[in-house]
Image (cartoon, rainbow, N blue to C red):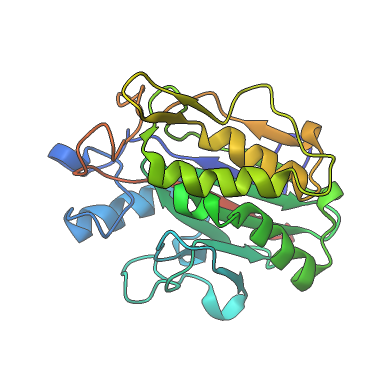
Length: 267
Protein backbone atom coordinates (compact mmCIF):
# COMPACT_ATOMS: atom_id res chain seq x y z
CA UNK A 1 0.00 0.00 0.00
CA UNK A 2 2.97 2.33 0.57
CA UNK A 3 4.04 1.77 -3.04
CA UNK A 4 0.52 1.84 -4.49
CA UNK A 5 -1.58 4.56 -2.83
CA UNK A 6 -4.71 3.55 -4.76
CA UNK A 7 -4.72 0.16 -3.01
CA UNK A 8 -6.58 -0.47 0.24
CA UNK A 9 -6.27 -3.93 1.79
CA UNK A 10 -6.28 -5.39 5.26
CA UNK A 11 -7.83 -7.50 7.97
CA UNK A 12 -9.84 -6.49 11.02
CA UNK A 13 -9.38 -7.53 14.62
CA UNK A 14 -12.24 -8.33 16.98
CA UNK A 15 -11.83 -4.93 18.69
CA UNK A 16 -13.72 -1.69 18.16
CA UNK A 17 -17.33 -2.68 17.48
CA UNK A 18 -20.70 -2.76 19.22
CA UNK A 19 -21.45 -6.51 19.34
CA UNK A 20 -21.87 -8.14 22.73
CA UNK A 21 -20.83 -11.30 24.58
CA UNK A 22 -19.47 -14.07 22.34
CA UNK A 23 -19.45 -11.70 19.37
CA UNK A 24 -17.60 -8.90 21.13
CA UNK A 25 -17.04 -6.58 19.69
CA UNK A 26 -16.28 -6.01 15.97
CA UNK A 27 -18.16 -8.99 14.54
CA UNK A 28 -18.61 -8.55 10.79
CA UNK A 29 -20.56 -11.77 10.14
CA UNK A 30 -24.34 -11.73 9.70
CA UNK A 31 -24.55 -15.55 9.72
CA UNK A 32 -23.31 -16.36 13.25
CA UNK A 33 -26.34 -15.49 15.42
CA UNK A 34 -25.39 -11.95 16.38
CA UNK A 35 -27.88 -9.07 16.33
CA UNK A 36 -28.00 -8.05 12.64
CA UNK A 37 -28.28 -4.36 13.54
CA UNK A 38 -25.05 -4.59 15.54
CA UNK A 39 -23.28 -6.34 12.67
CA UNK A 40 -24.37 -3.70 10.16
CA UNK A 41 -23.22 -0.98 12.55
CA UNK A 42 -19.83 -2.72 12.81
CA UNK A 43 -19.57 -2.84 9.02
CA UNK A 44 -20.44 0.86 8.82
CA UNK A 45 -17.74 1.63 11.40
CA UNK A 46 -15.24 -0.32 9.33
CA UNK A 47 -16.12 1.59 6.15
CA UNK A 48 -15.79 4.88 8.02
CA UNK A 49 -12.39 3.85 9.39
CA UNK A 50 -11.25 3.11 5.83
CA UNK A 51 -12.68 6.41 4.53
CA UNK A 52 -14.79 4.59 1.96
CA UNK A 53 -18.51 4.67 1.23
CA UNK A 54 -20.55 1.91 2.90
CA UNK A 55 -22.37 1.60 -0.43
CA UNK A 56 -19.06 0.50 -2.01
CA UNK A 57 -18.64 -2.47 0.35
CA UNK A 58 -19.40 -5.80 -1.35
CA UNK A 59 -19.88 -9.03 0.64
CA UNK A 60 -20.33 -12.70 -0.30
CA UNK A 61 -21.85 -15.80 1.28
CA UNK A 62 -18.95 -18.25 1.62
CA UNK A 63 -19.40 -22.02 1.32
CA UNK A 64 -15.85 -23.46 1.46
CA UNK A 65 -15.72 -23.99 -2.29
CA UNK A 66 -13.60 -22.50 -5.06
CA UNK A 67 -16.15 -20.53 -7.07
CA UNK A 68 -14.79 -17.12 -8.08
CA UNK A 69 -16.98 -14.20 -9.19
CA UNK A 70 -15.91 -11.29 -11.35
CA UNK A 71 -17.48 -8.27 -9.66
CA UNK A 72 -18.57 -5.19 -11.59
CA UNK A 73 -20.67 -2.06 -10.99
CA UNK A 74 -23.90 -4.09 -10.82
CA UNK A 75 -22.64 -5.93 -7.73
CA UNK A 76 -21.35 -2.83 -5.93
CA UNK A 77 -22.62 -2.89 -2.34
CA UNK A 78 -24.05 -6.42 -2.54
CA UNK A 79 -24.63 -8.02 0.86
CA UNK A 80 -23.49 -5.03 2.88
CA UNK A 81 -26.54 -5.11 5.15
CA UNK A 82 -28.21 -8.48 4.47
CA UNK A 83 -27.25 -12.06 3.64
CA UNK A 84 -29.97 -12.29 1.00
CA UNK A 85 -28.38 -9.61 -1.17
CA UNK A 86 -24.81 -10.98 -0.85
CA UNK A 87 -22.98 -12.68 -3.71
CA UNK A 88 -24.17 -16.25 -3.24
CA UNK A 89 -21.94 -19.32 -2.81
CA UNK A 90 -18.70 -17.54 -3.65
CA UNK A 91 -15.38 -18.00 -1.82
CA UNK A 92 -13.38 -15.71 -4.06
CA UNK A 93 -14.03 -12.60 -6.05
CA UNK A 94 -12.06 -10.28 -8.29
CA UNK A 95 -12.60 -6.82 -9.72
CA UNK A 96 -11.06 -4.12 -11.87
CA UNK A 97 -13.67 -1.59 -10.77
CA UNK A 98 -12.26 1.44 -8.98
CA UNK A 99 -14.15 2.57 -5.90
CA UNK A 100 -15.54 -0.93 -5.21
CA UNK A 101 -14.26 -2.89 -2.21
CA UNK A 102 -14.41 -6.64 -1.73
CA UNK A 103 -15.04 -8.05 1.76
CA UNK A 104 -14.86 -11.65 3.03
CA UNK A 105 -15.27 -13.06 6.54
CA UNK A 106 -12.96 -15.22 8.61
CA UNK A 107 -12.52 -16.87 12.00
CA UNK A 108 -9.56 -19.25 11.41
CA UNK A 109 -9.64 -19.79 7.63
CA UNK A 110 -6.93 -18.19 5.50
CA UNK A 111 -7.50 -14.82 3.78
CA UNK A 112 -5.72 -14.56 0.41
CA UNK A 113 -5.11 -11.16 -1.18
CA UNK A 114 -4.11 -10.51 -4.81
CA UNK A 115 -3.13 -7.26 -6.55
CA UNK A 116 -2.16 -6.87 -10.19
CA UNK A 117 -0.59 -3.40 -10.47
CA UNK A 118 -0.18 -3.73 -14.25
CA UNK A 119 -3.87 -4.24 -15.06
CA UNK A 120 -5.15 -2.54 -11.89
CA UNK A 121 -7.10 -5.54 -10.67
CA UNK A 122 -7.58 -7.07 -7.22
CA UNK A 123 -8.77 -10.38 -5.82
CA UNK A 124 -9.75 -11.79 -2.44
CA UNK A 125 -10.27 -15.44 -1.50
CA UNK A 126 -11.38 -17.45 1.52
CA UNK A 127 -9.32 -20.62 2.01
CA UNK A 128 -10.27 -23.09 4.71
CA UNK A 129 -8.88 -26.60 4.37
CA UNK A 130 -11.52 -27.45 1.77
CA UNK A 131 -10.86 -24.36 -0.33
CA UNK A 132 -7.13 -24.94 0.01
CA UNK A 133 -7.54 -28.56 -1.12
CA UNK A 134 -9.45 -27.19 -4.14
CA UNK A 135 -6.55 -24.76 -4.75
CA UNK A 136 -8.70 -21.65 -4.63
CA UNK A 137 -5.56 -19.49 -4.87
CA UNK A 138 -4.86 -20.97 -8.30
CA UNK A 139 -8.52 -20.56 -9.31
CA UNK A 140 -8.43 -16.88 -8.33
CA UNK A 141 -5.33 -16.25 -10.43
CA UNK A 142 -6.85 -18.10 -13.39
CA UNK A 143 -9.99 -15.95 -13.15
CA UNK A 144 -7.94 -12.74 -13.00
CA UNK A 145 -5.94 -13.91 -16.02
CA UNK A 146 -9.07 -14.70 -18.05
CA UNK A 147 -10.96 -11.55 -17.03
CA UNK A 148 -8.21 -8.94 -16.91
CA UNK A 149 -5.14 -10.38 -18.65
CA UNK A 150 -3.29 -10.74 -15.34
CA UNK A 151 0.12 -12.45 -15.45
CA UNK A 152 0.97 -14.26 -12.17
CA UNK A 153 4.55 -12.94 -12.22
CA UNK A 154 3.18 -9.39 -11.85
CA UNK A 155 0.89 -10.19 -8.93
CA UNK A 156 1.57 -9.02 -5.38
CA UNK A 157 -0.04 -11.37 -2.88
CA UNK A 158 -0.57 -11.63 0.86
CA UNK A 159 -1.70 -14.35 3.24
CA UNK A 160 -3.44 -12.92 6.26
CA UNK A 161 -3.92 -14.03 9.87
CA UNK A 162 -5.44 -17.50 10.30
CA UNK A 163 -5.19 -20.51 12.55
CA UNK A 164 -1.55 -21.57 12.38
CA UNK A 165 0.29 -24.84 12.12
CA UNK A 166 0.87 -24.47 15.85
CA UNK A 167 -2.84 -24.96 16.62
CA UNK A 168 -4.69 -26.48 13.65
CA UNK A 169 -5.18 -30.20 14.41
CA UNK A 170 -6.76 -32.35 11.68
CA UNK A 171 -7.37 -36.05 11.02
CA UNK A 172 -6.54 -38.54 8.27
CA UNK A 173 -9.56 -37.52 6.19
CA UNK A 174 -8.23 -33.99 5.81
CA UNK A 175 -4.60 -35.04 5.34
CA UNK A 176 -5.51 -37.46 2.54
CA UNK A 177 -6.94 -34.49 0.61
CA UNK A 178 -3.93 -32.35 1.46
CA UNK A 179 -1.55 -35.09 0.26
CA UNK A 180 -3.30 -34.96 -3.12
CA UNK A 181 -2.51 -31.24 -3.34
CA UNK A 182 1.12 -31.80 -2.36
CA UNK A 183 1.45 -34.47 -5.07
CA UNK A 184 -0.05 -32.07 -7.60
CA UNK A 185 2.43 -29.36 -6.61
CA UNK A 186 5.29 -31.73 -7.37
CA UNK A 187 4.05 -32.75 -10.83
CA UNK A 188 6.27 -31.66 -13.71
CA UNK A 189 9.24 -30.85 -11.51
CA UNK A 190 10.17 -27.45 -10.21
CA UNK A 191 7.97 -27.92 -7.18
CA UNK A 192 8.04 -25.06 -4.69
CA UNK A 193 9.94 -25.79 -1.53
CA UNK A 194 8.83 -24.11 1.64
CA UNK A 195 10.90 -23.28 4.66
CA UNK A 196 8.22 -24.85 6.85
CA UNK A 197 6.62 -28.31 6.62
CA UNK A 198 2.99 -28.36 5.49
CA UNK A 199 2.00 -30.72 8.30
CA UNK A 200 3.48 -32.60 11.22
CA UNK A 201 2.31 -35.92 12.67
CA UNK A 202 1.35 -35.80 16.36
CA UNK A 203 1.69 -38.49 19.02
CA UNK A 204 -2.09 -38.91 19.08
CA UNK A 205 -2.16 -39.96 15.42
CA UNK A 206 -3.52 -36.63 14.21
CA UNK A 207 -1.70 -33.83 12.41
CA UNK A 208 -0.91 -30.15 12.79
CA UNK A 209 -1.63 -28.53 9.41
CA UNK A 210 -0.06 -25.28 8.18
CA UNK A 211 -2.60 -23.90 5.72
CA UNK A 212 -0.68 -20.66 5.26
CA UNK A 213 2.40 -22.48 4.00
CA UNK A 214 0.37 -24.71 1.69
CA UNK A 215 -1.38 -21.70 0.17
CA UNK A 216 1.98 -19.99 -0.27
CA UNK A 217 3.27 -23.00 -2.20
CA UNK A 218 0.11 -23.11 -4.32
CA UNK A 219 0.63 -19.42 -5.16
CA UNK A 220 4.24 -20.05 -6.15
CA UNK A 221 3.36 -23.07 -8.28
CA UNK A 222 0.76 -20.89 -10.02
CA UNK A 223 3.48 -18.40 -10.95
CA UNK A 224 3.60 -15.75 -8.21
CA UNK A 225 7.17 -14.89 -7.29
CA UNK A 226 8.15 -15.84 -3.71
CA UNK A 227 9.36 -12.29 -3.05
CA UNK A 228 5.88 -11.05 -4.00
CA UNK A 229 4.10 -13.01 -1.24
CA UNK A 230 3.72 -11.58 2.26
CA UNK A 231 2.64 -13.97 5.03
CA UNK A 232 1.24 -12.89 8.39
CA UNK A 233 2.79 -14.52 11.46
CA UNK A 234 -0.38 -14.05 13.55
CA UNK A 235 -2.39 -17.12 14.61
CA UNK A 236 -6.09 -16.50 15.28
CA UNK A 237 -6.24 -19.40 17.75
CA UNK A 238 -3.22 -18.21 19.76
CA UNK A 239 -4.46 -14.62 19.81
CA UNK A 240 -8.13 -14.67 20.81
CA UNK A 241 -7.41 -11.35 22.52
CA UNK A 242 -7.14 -9.91 19.00
CA UNK A 243 -9.12 -12.29 16.81
CA UNK A 244 -12.18 -14.53 16.71
CA UNK A 245 -11.32 -18.24 16.47
CA UNK A 246 -14.03 -20.72 15.51
CA UNK A 247 -11.90 -23.67 16.66
CA UNK A 248 -10.60 -22.17 19.92
CA UNK A 249 -13.94 -20.67 20.96
CA UNK A 250 -16.07 -23.74 20.30
CA UNK A 251 -17.91 -22.48 17.25
CA UNK A 252 -19.82 -19.60 18.85
CA UNK A 253 -17.88 -16.50 17.94
CA UNK A 254 -17.77 -13.60 15.51
CA UNK A 255 -16.01 -13.06 12.21
CA UNK A 256 -13.23 -10.76 11.11
CA UNK A 257 -13.37 -9.10 7.71
CA UNK A 258 -10.67 -9.05 5.08
CA UNK A 259 -10.96 -6.39 2.40
CA UNK A 260 -9.27 -5.22 -0.78
CA UNK A 261 -10.10 -2.55 -3.32
CA UNK A 262 -8.78 0.30 -5.44
CA UNK A 263 -9.76 3.83 -4.54
CA UNK A 264 -11.37 5.95 -7.22
CA UNK A 265 -9.03 8.58 -8.72
CA UNK A 266 -9.13 11.97 -7.04
CA UNK A 267 -10.80 14.63 -9.17
